Amino acid sequence: MFQTLNLKAVLVATVVTLGLIASVIVGSRNLQNFDGALIAYLFGTIFACFGIAYRYVVWLQRPPTWRYWVRGWQLFFSRKMFVYGWELAKHFFNDFVCQKFIYHRGTKRWIAHLSLVVGCMIAFAVTIPLTFGWIHFGLKQGTIDTYEAYFWGFKTMEFPLHTWIAFNMFHILNWCSVLVIIGVTFMMRRRLTDAGQIAIQTFEGDWLPLILLLAISVTGLGLTWDYEFMQGKAHQFMAISHAISVILFLIWLPFGKFFHLFQRPAQLGVAIYRKEGEIGEQAICPHTEQPFASKLHINDLKEVTKKLGFNYDLKDGTSHLDLSPQGKRAALAKAHLAARKKSGSYFG
Amino acid sequence: MNNTQFKTDQEFFMDPQRCIGCHACEMACAECETNGQTPMISVDYVDRFTTTQTSVQICMHCEDPVCAKACPADAITKDEFGIVHSANVARCVACSNCVLACPFGVPKKVEPMQLMMKCNMCYDRTSAGKKPMCATVCPSGALWYGKREDIEKARPNSTPVNSFQFGKQAVKTKVNIMMPKGSTQLVVD
Image (cartoon, rainbow over all chains, first blue to last red; front, side, top):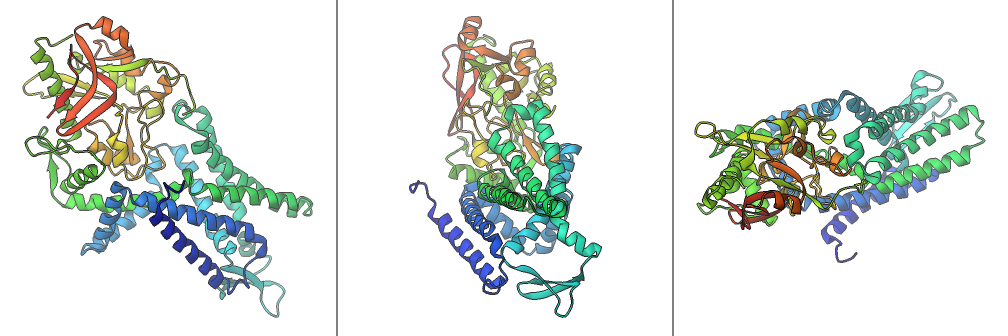
């Protein structure tokens, strides 16, 4: 295990995790606003933080990933910052807010994914600051019907109890659970009925994430159900089962499918890289004599593939990578024809 | 993957010289459930102005797939049967590295979906012990799937080869190309 340990990643992950712990201490005002009942969630989140940072740094060290990472930031902080800033904003809206690319993969998949994303993101935005003690609530001094919300110890808002604002604030995680259950239901149905999906899916890659999300949502709703309709009789069971499902989710976060939450923003880097490619010189395929990619991309790819141990340099000083995909297929067909011709028979 | 009925004694054999450009393989490929009804095979007119030659290209499923290595998102994987799978839909960031790095010109990017897709040897069928769609419909035998001894018997003047040379780069593949008897490698440069 220690032979494969990536020391750079350990170092970065340790620094990030210590930074997180420091922010919990500072943000909760020396833990005075920290809710002790959430301690298990905090440990789960700290583990997830270390795991995510470790995997992210290992991932970044791969030559193609590193090339995109460096190029992305170089372009963003270049003189064309406003051009790329606008490009990023457009892609953020289309790809992350509206998720148009998933809509093109299927309407039901889009509804499912959007429900999951909205549900999960709101839930993260609420639960993570609560777990860290960054947010806490209290009764306004001298009143019995006004709540105050604090962030990092600073008062940010107040709202009267028994109003729709208070109702929705106290139940926001329930609405998130409903959205997640809708999304999970659609996705599970697809995984049970789509022949292509059935052929390639795995339990840990496709089913486990859905089961974990479903467990979190159902047990979360169970907590509300218990105190609203069961006079809290099942509170212990609900609280423990919810905590177990959330902590399993947090432990699985760096390893499984959920890691794509952290990889996906790379799509924004790719967007500005492509924009730069469109503006710049184009690579012309010697076979089709048509542009097929940016020169920047082809040159970067030649370097990256060499770093990965692939050398497509040809005798004449050009590279097989100078050909477009169609050009490569033609080159193979021509070489095959030449070999057949040389043997004296076109067929055999 | 989950299904274990993949027949390891059966292989894919491709002979571009036999391709008659009928596009039957393309139509059949669109029946593959894992592609979402999008054909992943390429049928090309090699040089339409000077020759009637057509060519067919499926994924060769490289032993050391450059598409997977060049992928910045770790989206492409090779399984225990040597099948190089289409990009993981959750991870693919549509950068086109795989499309441009593949020496055979196989992966395709579906722009609206922002997703790379490629032939996965009809995994829905081959993992259930069936032949890939394209090989079942090819009328000229340009695409053939079965036992090595059977094709060697049927085509005694050809040798299946799975070694390629692209300039300085040697590539070994799971899929074979039918070459003149006694050949050991197809050199492309």
